[in-house]
Each structure stands twice: as structure tokens, then as C-alpha cells.
Image (cartoon, rainbow, N blue to C red; front, side, top):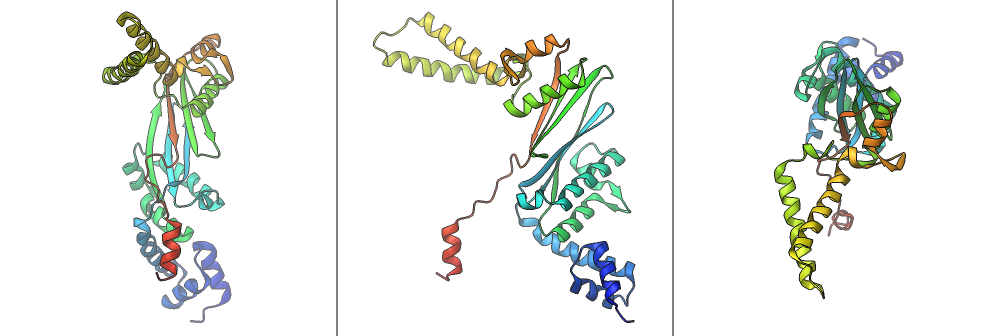
Length: 297
């Protein structure tokens, strides 16, 4: 069967593969478009699997509110250039739709979720072959709220950081303000009651040793009772810096977050913060070594 230019173009439009690959696929399948797509898919998956050893630490996070549930996930690629590409942002939206439609609650569940007769894991492999970089999914989770609670979602730089606040009543604007604050100030805890006793003990021990060393080097050492008060004061200051409700509110540093939400007739029930690539060991290129290697030395 004659393989025409229009057939090649049609296959290329559907698959995104190169013209020569499309022509090979059509030739190998005697012009059968469906079989040619499968042929390219098989070749594409093979190419994508070779990317498995690469490090995908760029990409975008997403937070999607759907009724009383909020979906979090992160889609990673290898370079920020690809993360800003329209094909990648469209893929993020497709992944979002597939997860929601299948009701997936975790990363493994999401990768097994079906769309167009194939699992999401296979769709990502195909996308990896088409885009040319390793693509991986992680940190899929669902947060729920009570009917009387309010979600506030915020995306920074298109999804480099995404945050969510869950408020006890109040309005959407206040909830979003808190989500923005969480993005900017990165609290570790909601309040001091959430801090584990071992964390408190460790911090108190470090501050005590620091104060004792300062006191030993001082011209006029302070009494032990003063040192104890000094340690507790520093501990309280440090705890306020990592607890959301105690932090100065980002839009008005003269008041705390707790004071701000109280003025709005609400309180913070919980919050989440997801940062793209956090925890992934990024590759560090040695430029000098790379130049020497290319020079054959």
C-alpha cells in the first residue's frame, strides 16, 4: 500500500512522533492507522523505559478542590524548560482528570487508574517518549473537610509550590489568605500542641547547651535560675517561628495569624504545603569534568 504524505501527517498529529518514525510505522503495518499507533506506542514505551534511570526533579504540583475533597499531586520531569511547556501543563490537567474520575487516593492507585483503556502509568510512559524526558508521578493524596469547613487553595509560580488551608467556617477569601501565608512562611506545625515531646526536648537541650557556653564565656556569669528562664524564652520564640497560628500574618505583620483569623470569625483546622522536587536528590553536573571527558582527557 502506498504511504502518502497526508497519512504520515495524520499519524504525526495523533501521536506527536517524528515524520520518519510515522512513515516507518505505516510501512510496517501496511498503512493501518490503528496498528501504526500501537507500533509507535510500543517503540515509544521502549524509549521511555530507557529514561527510568534519569532524575526527574522539576515539574509542577497541583491542588484541586472538588466538593469536600482536595486532591494533591506532583508530576515531575527533568528540566524546568519542559515544565513550562504547554504539552506538559496539558498533561498535568489530564492526570488531574484521570485521578478524580477514578477516585484514586494514593500514588499507586493513581498509576493504576484507567483512561482510554490503559493505565495512567502507561499514559505517562507514552508522554515521556513524546516529550523526550522522564516523567513521574508522586505525592498523590486526598484531603477532606467537613461540610461546615472551608478550603483555601493557592498555587505559586504555576505550581512550583501549592498549598491548602482548611478553615473552621469563615469565607473563601480568608481561607485563601491563609493558604498564601503557608506558601510564603512555610510553617511546620499548626500550633505548639502538635509538636512532638522528643522535638521539644531536643530543642531545649540544644538551647540549654548554647546558653551554658555563653554563660561560661561571659565576664559576669548569670545565676542558674536566669539561665533556665533564658532557655525557655528562646524556646518559645523558636516555636512561634514554626507554628502557623503564632507567625506574623504575611499581609499584616503587626498581628499574628491567630489574631487575623479570629477577626474574621474563623480558625485554622489544618494546612498542607507541597513543593515541587522536594526530597529528590538532584543531579549535580561537574562542568570541568564534562569538558575534560569530551576532550578525551
